[in-house]
Image 1 (cartoon, rainbow over the protein chains, first blue to last red):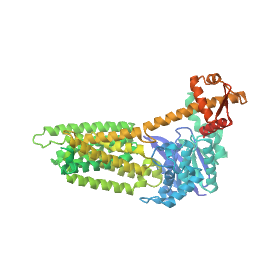
Image 2 (tube, chains in turn purple, red; image 1 turned 135 degrees about the horizontal axis):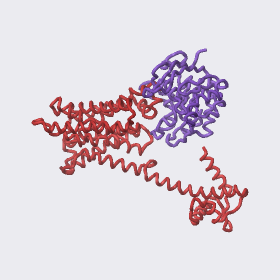
Image 3 (tube, each protein chain N blue to C red; image 1 turned 180 degrees about the horizontal axis):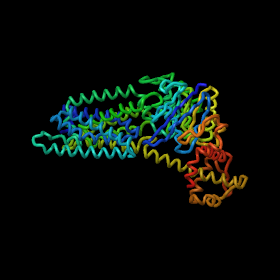
Image 4 (tube, rainbow over the protein chains, first blue to last red; image 1 turned 180 degrees about the vertical axis):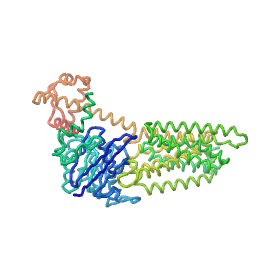
Length: 242
Length: 374
């Protein structure tokens, strides 16, 4: 089986201190995978490293056997909602259109075709009525759906999402999970940094437990168990009682 | 000089044109600086340019403006390089590093300037003009250089429009879209340094940062669109350049640079207050309106709650309502006034000293709650 993602020996350090240690990770094509672990486990760092935003000290990541640069256009990304300033002078449609920039390449402007793609994506996340809305007027859940729409426009085969469920309303949570399932039914691979342990088994079929090292990775029903969770969250528990 | 001379006077026209160009250039570049929350960068770079001017003079022995500004460019650029290495290699935060470098470079610049003044026959007079600018020394040649610089900056920004927009809004997404963050950042930073250096002669190292920040801050108040913001910002900058020149030339001993800065500051203060949507006055008015609606909804809500507790539609007297809302401390006549307003909206009904919530009132409050939950 050819893996959608294969990370080998990834070690990442911040100020010479390792934040990810010797990560070996294989993600099969077509899974809906959650990356789970305590705060500071390096979940976001892991996906940023795989996506070439952070340079690892050692190791490399391959997508369908190829380097990131070769597959970049097949990889979609949804950053954390809080990573941008929502008071930026722009509207919803414009943000979603940004999803086409990678395909456009340098210097070319987005035109009618790109706008149409963005409108289609907005429809998918139920945000079309907000197309002309200034982004500062969106609720948290709406912001998240705008980011999802932007990723959909990328029309990728694999999506990385950094805490898409963080602080969203019930309606958005449902919209996101429906979207994730739709993506899976289209044989796309989705990797999600996830916080809510309660919903892991319901939403995802593949799980990676992370706490600076990989604790376990595989089908949810096999690896998402008490023993592994204890291991992943143990250091925190120990600290609490020491 | 009288006002009549302004448009016929050659020197003045040159100065006005130069100041307008400087304002427009810094307005365009400032938009990106402000949106990327790097306002302090302008401050650091402009102050850090001073030692470069002094060293350039010491090395070349000439007051040729090109050499001096080249020196300013190099030391301005170097300061940002050092700031970035400090952040990379230590735990010092960005703003602290900027502040540190700003004062170190500026202090060094003052030392060099003092030293130059003590050299006999050094023909140094005028270098200290770079502190607060000396617009009157602008020559036609300088204005031509400024036009070329301004034109080049506009072409680069037009070419890299979507790339710079993406970088400013979401640098991570910029990176994954295949536009290397570091390279774009380098280009934009260089443009900032160029814009600042261009303005040093007119406005000086101390006040130049305001020319970067103020037009953009003003423009942001009036628009929610990046393209409009860039244009508006350059108009504000250019306008303050012209107005500042005119005012300073019509009064004896009024320095041009500081007057320009006062004008652009006035524009930004006005914008902060009166711009529709974002202005302080507008916000106050909206808060007032919201407060009214809030009071009304609180009272409607308390009748609604009493009904739920009592499990049936019944009327309540003013006293019932004031007790039930005891923790909110509405005076009883405020409650009565609000109830009367609610009655005109058909949300409550008054009968025999008692107030009843209507079907419409129930819908209204349930709607309101539903919207809050969303």
